[in-house]
Length: 119
Image 1 (spheres, one colour):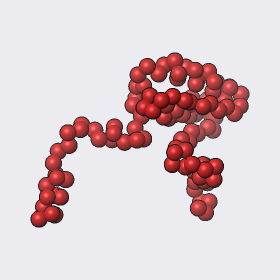
Image 2: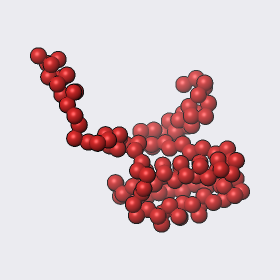
Image 3: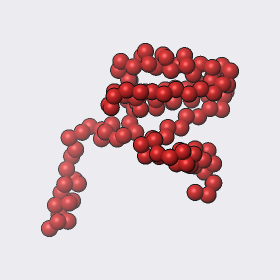
């Protein structure tokens, strides 16, 4: 009986066209009303592309305003701009709500860039 209910519910069509857009990692192709912030980040990170300098920035704001989406989208664009200029640069997003300690953040870095490193 429960198996039938389970299968019936699983076979039902979703009310969503694309459920992947509900995932926490989803970043829309267009970030509405974030042009100024994106331009600012581009100016801040310009030396990274031009002079291979290091740079950092702190993005703050209320919950749900698009900080993570902006950071992820900018990271992708930064990688693309670097690749187009033959620079070896990659963006890694670390969720510090999940990885709360410096050790956890460092572990993410090591896992990304040295996958054979023993965990």
